[in-house]
Amino acid sequence: MKTSICSYSFYRMVKDGKQDMFQYITDCNELGVDLIDPWSGYSEAPGQERGQPPLMDNPDYADDIDKIKTEGDAVEMPFGCVALDRAHIYEPIEANRQRTSQWLDVTARLGGTTMRIDTGPRVETWTDDEFQIIVAGYNDLIAEAKTKGVQIIVENHWGPTKHPENTVRTLEAVKGLGRLFDSNNWAEGTQEKAWDMCAKYATFTHFKTFSFDENGDDPSVDLRECTNIL
Image 1 (cartoon, one colour):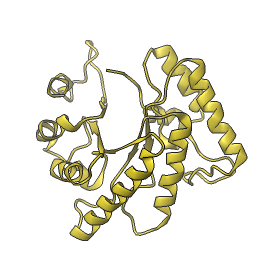
Image 2 (tube, one colour):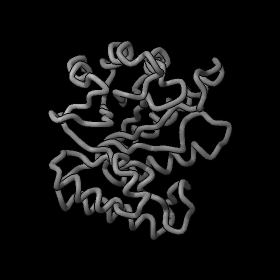
Image 3 (cartoon, rainbow, N blue to C red):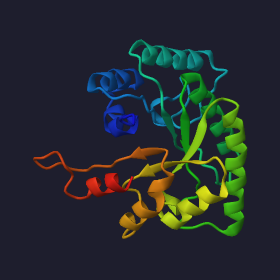
């Protein structure tokens, strides 16, 4: 088992200008974890508005990606899962697929093993037509990712995948799709059922904590039980 701290954990520091990708790598090294798990929000292309896709034909941006890889190599920490936001599989715009492909290039360039991408859309469930588009989209992306040595994984992040039945349906419908198992992001009242239903599919995990008691445990959730199930 390898451990990491997803860079999203520090997003408030990023927002306040107190951390960037390079400082995150330094922090991970000092904290003694095994992998670097970048969140896409850390890597905005120079000269572009926040949230825009990285442009690998932008020399400044490509050079920045190489510097990030060099920094990781310097502390002997490989890149694990790149968590990709704002480019989910289903949305009624075409730009998402382009963003996804560009971020796949970034993941491969960093030497990352996996890329997390959400299903979309931001509703509680899909129509049958939407689900078929999602399945086809993942199949297309998985085929592209395979040529670059990257596995595609889906997280119970928001929207339909907060419901464990939808998560299992997606995993069963898409051959080769991995699973980012988040302990927390489940519809209200479904968490323990979701742990039981979805733990067996886990490729990566995210453990969410919100407060700590004197023993270092989060009193709001039984993470020991979650860990035992996994």
